[in-house]
Image (cartoon, rainbow, N blue to C red):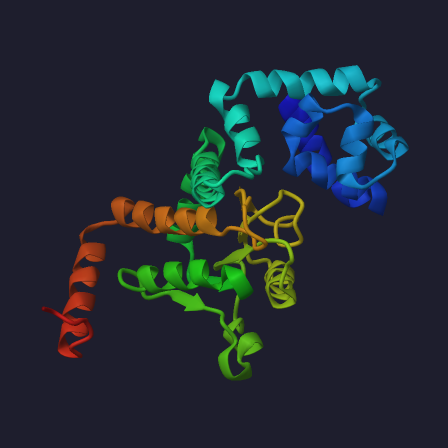
Amino acid sequence: MQSDLREKLISDYGKLSPQMQKAARYILDHPSDVALRSMRALARAADVPPSTITRLMSAIGVETWREFRDHYQSRLLDQPESYAQRARETQRTDQDVNRDEHLLESICRTEIDNISAAYSPELVARMIDACAMIEDARHVFIVGKGAAYPAAVQFAYAYRLFRDNGVLVDGHSGTFGDQLRGIGRRDVLIAVGAKPYIRDTIRAVEFACNQHCPVIALTDSDVSPIAVNALCKLVVRDTSQSFFQSFTAALSVMQALVALLVARGDQKALQRIAAAEEQLAVFDTYFED
């Protein structure tokens, strides 16, 4: 039933009022809060009136708060015992003389939790599906702007070491639209982004969908604007102890996709990697002591 509730929130998201969308997104992004908080506390955290939570439950066919909360409590019990405790510890603010060390320790735990969550059984299955889509594609377009750019660049660079059909859509010299020319149903667009979302990334996803091109979205929510119409959603955490969101999990997933593609590849992939290394050597790319 828990999975059904989550899927119902996602499938009905576009039909909800803006206030209910706000509540639904918070619940999708913070499912443990439903299990651990009262309805009023959840509403405050989501920045909506309690009546919005009530209307949202009714919209997805749940009659009472207790029924709604019980489903999420069952989900929380299925998680590793230390997970909730670690999450609480990362929110702790230490005021003693060792606060810098404690902050760094907290950052480390948070990043480890972000990566661990990205390799859940559900996400692993989706990564394997994403690899199959990439392997069958005529061209693989990769877009990620702003803070998501390093993850997009890393995938594009590594991918081109063993495949020659990758296109990094970076828009240098005003060529953003040009780089998407010809995209269609035989291609794949990999879009990376988290809130606050970059308009160019959203436009690229919308254009790809209009051209019937399948989209793989690596993002922070099932209902983010780059995930709503994606064929494959890789939703990772961007929790951070800093003022800036973390892209550690997103970068890890992009690296994992490259590793999977190479592992699933044939001898030709290995030959192309060897040829790429030879070319780099010709240009004396790397310093050698």
